[in-house]
Structure formats: C-alpha cells, structure tokens
Image (cartoon, rainbow, N blue to C red; front, side, top):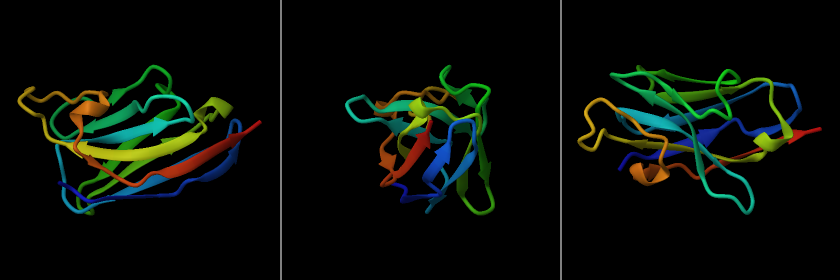
Amino acid sequence: QVQLVESGGGSVQAGGSLSLSCEASASENCMGWFRQAPGKEREGLAIFNTYGPTTYADSVKGRFTVSKDNAKNVLYLHLNSTKPEDTAVYYCAADGYRGRGYYCTLGRNDYASWGQGTQVTVGT
C-alpha cells in the first residue's frame, strides 16, 4: 500500500479558498480526495487519473480542482467558492485500476490506501 499524508486543512469563510496537499510514498494510477462529514458516509470528490480523465462529484464540479505533481508524488485539491456544507474531514486515497481498464471510480471501496485526514471547516 501507498503511504499518504494530508496537510493544508483549516478554517475558511464561505466563498473563500483553501488548498490541500497529499504527499504519497509512491504513485498510483487513481489518486483522489474524499470527505466525511459527521454522521455521513465518506464520499468521493475528485479523482486524478494518470492515463484518463479526471473525475469530479457533482457537488464539487466547477468549484474544486484536483492536480498532481508527478515529480514529487504530491496530490492537491484546490477548494474555491466554499460553502458551509463543505465542512468535513478530507482524506486522500490511492489505488490502481483493478482491472477496469483506464478508469478510476469515486467509490470509496475501490481504494486501499488512505491518509489520516485533515479537517476543513467553512464558516458562514
């Protein structure tokens, strides 16, 4: 498994921006961001695909951007136009294609490597 360490969480006012980083011990073809709010299931937000298109959840499409520095094995998530409902613990995750061709999913069960999470709080 890949070791993942997130950083960059914190507090931001609604409408503001924040950037998260995830340092990986190695690269995987599917690397992305999930979040989990209290009392809710962990949801996939944005997945960076080495050989295919980036995938975004509808809830963050147009507001969040995922990118990767391949040389450093660092994954980023840029949060823009934040909303109070974006408040959650944000996790970085990684895995391979698992026989799906060049396709990465937003499903949490398709990822074996996880970071420890970083808290993001969006105030009103």
